[in-house]
Each structure stands twice: as structure tokens, then as C-alpha cells.
Length: 251
Image 1 (tube, rainbow, N blue to C red):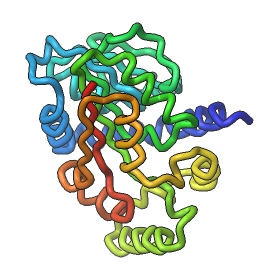
Image 2 (image 1 turned 90 degrees about the horizontal axis):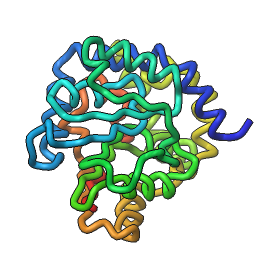
Image 3 (image 1 turned 45 degrees about the horizontal axis):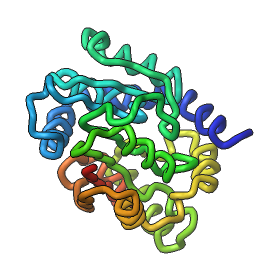
Image 4 (image 1 turned 60 degrees about the vertical axis):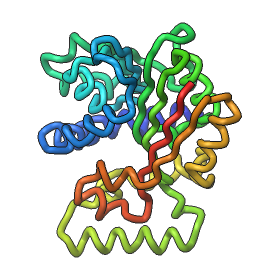
């Protein structure tokens, strides 16, 4: 099976479960926490004047909170099932969001279409992340913002020390009687994909910063502690060994 098809098949099966995770975020203070963090970095204009592309929207969390705040939102995902879940989760906001099934590495938009491009937990999962960054910058307007929230997911498959830290995370979650975000999924299928995609073994976010600078971003800022601002207590317990970072680029 080609890697892209394998990735699509995995997330197709995960759509309903992942949607439940997003529903939980939408029903708690995580909704406002994330919106405030995004607003800190988005262009300083009235929301209705800002066109945002949410790439790899999944069940629609970013798209929904941004649309509700008044931004013009287009949301794309490669998996049809994810977009169905996203529409459902958006409820009455669904018609205010442009939903498109599309490959994050090959976008079907004209150059300089959007004021901002946002993404969460996607880049690590791509077959060609360099191509993806090129495309995201292509559709971004001059002076526009790229906000990519991600982490070094699955480094523990290649690093013994990270493996020990990962195992400590699993023990911590069990001791706190929380849901384990890894073992409640098809972990074998996801680890098989993680061994094949390039970013599982690469030092990030240094890689992202160097690439964006090579791609002529006028400004690149890395916030390695963004997880402290946006993660819930349960997320911190599950992912302490793989802290989320923010890569912010300005075209």
C-alpha cells in the first residue's frame, strides 16, 4: 500500500474517535485557551477581514473556534470521513466554513490567497513535509502568518532514551487513572506509519526553522513551550516526553 493511502486509511478509521476528542475540547475551557493563543499570533486586523486556511482540520476544532470568532475560514483535510465529522461538530457554523477535501502537500488554491495558514499535529504525519511547507507559503499572502503546532511524535521508536520517557508517560497516565491517548488507538498501525514518514527521526523544531528560512520566510519564531499554555492536564500527563511547539513564520 502506498504510504499516502496507508495514512488515509488509518485516519479514516480514527475519524469517529478523534472527533470525540475534538468534541471534548469544544465543550471545555480548551476552546477559549486555544482561541486566545491563536489570536496572539494572527494578523492584527478585524476577524472578518482575515482569511484563514486550516490545513489538516481533522474533526474541525481550529476551523470551528476561528469561524465562531468571526474569521473567514477554509478548512481542508485529505480524509472524507474527517470532513464529515468536522461538519457535524460545527453545527450551525458549518455553512460559514469552506470545507475542501485536499492533500496538504498539493493545495488547489491560487498563490497568495490567505492571510494566515494554521495547522495542528499534522506535519509529522506527512510523506513530504518540505513540499507541504512550500505549498503553505505559496498560498500565503505577503506579510501573512503561518502557525504550525506540532511535536516530535514517535521519536521513541528510534531513540532509547525517548522510549524510556514514553514508558514513564504511560505509567503516569495509569497512576492518575486517565485515558491513555496512545494505547486507546490502533498503536501498531500508527507506529508502522511513523516508521515510514521522515519527521519521526528528525530534530524539530530546528528542522522547521531552517527550512522556512531557506524558503525565504521574512521572520521565523519558535515557541518550544507553547504546550504549557494550551495543553490540558490530561494532555500533559500523556505527552510530557513530547512537548508541543509552535513554528511561526511570516512571509
